[in-house]
Length: 124
Image 1 (cartoon, one colour):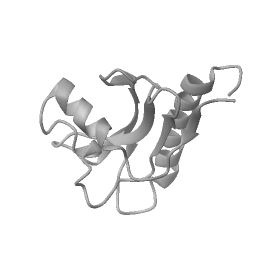
Image 2: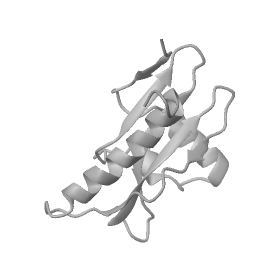
Image 3: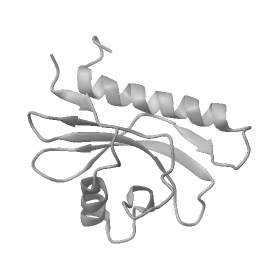
């Protein structure tokens, strides 16, 4: 039985803190716990035995918040933050519904990558 469990509460603040420690202040608006409108979808898991965590979140730059992709971030128990590469997960964020399928496909691909990281390729 895996010690990894889905964690459906708000995004853990440690993702934002460790990202900014590594890449600088104000570099992660997509992980900011003060963000009132949480961009969806997203997913996260925690490992109860080790304290490690994993999250799939939409990411963007301040210059262009319509072109987004999903990133998979891993928090090892000893600190730091790792960016896992799920491949191309780009999509357009728009107020309309025309891009929802592309967004959902990109999210599914990133979640599949995260679950493979957690459980291994043979169990996924």
